[in-house]
Image (cartoon, rainbow, N blue to C red):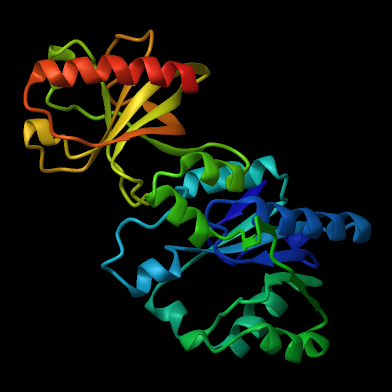
Length: 304
């Protein structure tokens, strides 16, 4: 899979099937769209590509939104590679790009740069300056520029439309098992292990500390997790919060990996969230905290 950060695409990727959107999370609904697009590409023997935007437009327009993403950009790339797309076009979303009209986006990118034959979008798709473009805009120009607009109906589960918004809400409420079903895989956080205060090690439960960066913040508390370190997979327990027992000030993900007691500083690890165990709590003493951690670990081992 080829990844482009500019519009200088190889000629072999022109005359293709294109899906457009943020695709945050690559959830079951996204997977359905891309499966249909892939089928269209296979029938017509043409490439399949995706257009997405970095940063996500909602985060560009509202600088106060710091924690929004279900997946990091690298995780998105990995998921799309699994789905066997031919290429991704990651358009840098900045002030200049935000002023491009919907008509110009169609002419300059969909037509002139890509020569797209089929354009897959959701029925609520909005694009162009001030979000004035929609599916009707795409249909209006499809005969002029030689492509066909394909609107994919939303996928529903328990009578609710599967969307990135719904999954974010599930994560924020600690309903991880439900979010995982909608993603068709465990929700995960990837990051580099940073140095902490070593309090966990001092009380007998060493942890790997990871910053949340721009991930959506889940319900604060304790989770059973599965941790990947390169090719190694280990069960573990994680806490997301401020560590109130120690009067902590910074939000942090702390992971105790079962069976590993070595230094993992600067190592990249992937933390799969399996099940919410309990909310974050301030304990009156270290002994109370240690006693609760032992109970949490027993529960975590049952869940993973």
